[in-house]
Each structure stands twice: as structure tokens, then as C-alpha cells.
Amino acid sequence: MDLKNLKSKLIGNEEERAVSPVIGVILMVAVTVILAAVIATMVMDLGSSVGETAPTASIDVTTNSDYESDSTSNNEMVYMSHTSGDELKSDEIEVIIRNEDGKSLMAMGPTGSDTNNGADVQADLSGDLDSGSTLTLSQVNDVSGDSSNFDNGDTIVVQLIHEPSDTTIVDSEVELPS
Image 1 (spheres, rainbow, N blue to C red):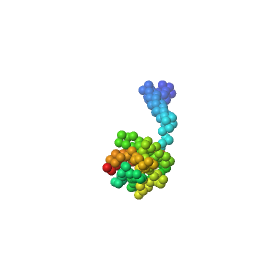
Image 2: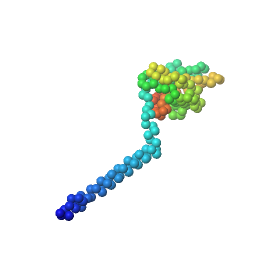
Image 3: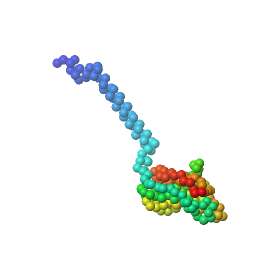
Image 4: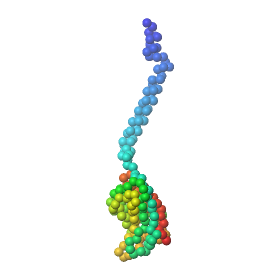
């Protein structure tokens, strides 16, 4: 029995033995990268938002052609008509009105509470918004009858946000009638 021949068959020659360490290094790098990705995902809590999808809805935003900013009674300003798509639960949406410069004039969330920043606007979020229904934004004057800070001819931006997914469903710029 020739031991040199047997040794070369079992262990291999110099060229054949170099393959194993290279594959080992590649596998170690791959395992390290995968482990780092898993740890980073856990630390940054990236998996928590998975599954929160926004409803898909088509909403038309129009202004009331009879709107008068100096009216002393409640005056409907903007209509948000749900034409098709998923139902929007009233406890999951927020309505925001901004001026042309992006300053938030009114925000009304799912709890019905609002941050007015001086704007006298009311949105009825009491019911869900489904196909065929309309959400009306109305100007509400204070007791003295002073008009709100919305004037005829002003351009406002109306946004409808789905809070659980933090997704803007509507972002529409409208001009109040002059």
C-alpha cells in the first residue's frame, strides 16, 4: 500500500485544499451580514409597521359656490365626497386645513378634538365616510358674529389623513369662491 498516494487521495494536494478556507470565509461573512440585519431590524423596530395599510378611496374635494366669508350664520365651505373605494372609519381619520403657505389653520382628529389656530371651522366626523357620503367643512362664527380667517378668493389646502397607517389619502388645493 502506497501511503503517499493514499494521503493525496484523502487530504488532496496543495491546490485542492485552498478551496475549503475560501468557502468558509464566504459563509462566515454571509452569516455575519444576515445576523446584523436581523439584529438591526429588532433594534429599530422596523417590523411593527408591517400590516398597517391605508384604505384606498377616491375623494372629490369641492367648494360651496354660495360660500360667503362674512356670513353671520354657519356657512359650508368645503365638501369632501367619497366617490369610491374603501370605507374610512371616523375614528381613524384626521382632517387638516392649511393656508397657501402651509400653515395649519385647523386640524380635527378622530377624537373630535381640534386645534384651531384661530380658525373657526367645524368638520362633522361623527359617522364613517363610505361611498356616496360627504364630509362637510363649515365656517362657524363666534358669538360676536366676527367672520373667520377664511376670505372669499382664498386658496386653502385640505388634507385627509388615515392615522393608523399615517398615510395622506387626500391632499387637495381649492379656492374659495370670490
